[in-house]
Length: 220
Image (cartoon, rainbow, N blue to C red):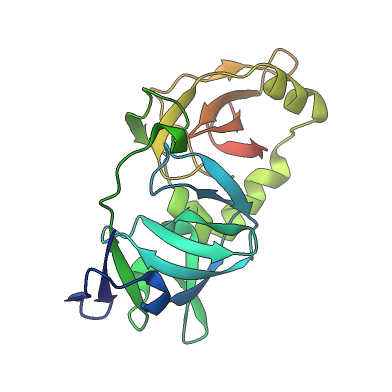
């Protein structure tokens, strides 16, 4: 895996030697803006290794040039996190990676081979679409609070979802409360509650409000 240094203010890239390691590269600090998966690789198809909780501080070891995924170290271990949900300190104000001009991070060129053992399912992995308004929802905390406050996910619903697993659909982004499921993605009934439905997004079982198709709970 090759590392480069990216200055976000100028988007200038300085190549490091092929033997350079992340330990000697530039790191940055960030905070998880939502409960966020730690994955074994930079994409929604990779196995979930752990979860960072909202507010957790992490060290960012490097990010893909697309700024979609970053390799991080947190109290929950090491792994890849979806970058739009990482908030960086910019002169006392928390901002997402693409809005931080004063932070230098390492750009990781992902050249690693795909190992079936690191993926959620062998032969699976085609991304069917994208979660809607995920990054916006992560920043707009008030919107997420409103959804969560008006949603009702009781233990009976959670139990049913856990006992009736479905095949995962892969969507760009990460399933967090407030993100919406595209209209063409199948959702499944919960017999005890007609107002909600469920599905598996990127390896996580999620409960959605049926009318809005917004995620109201990630079942872990």
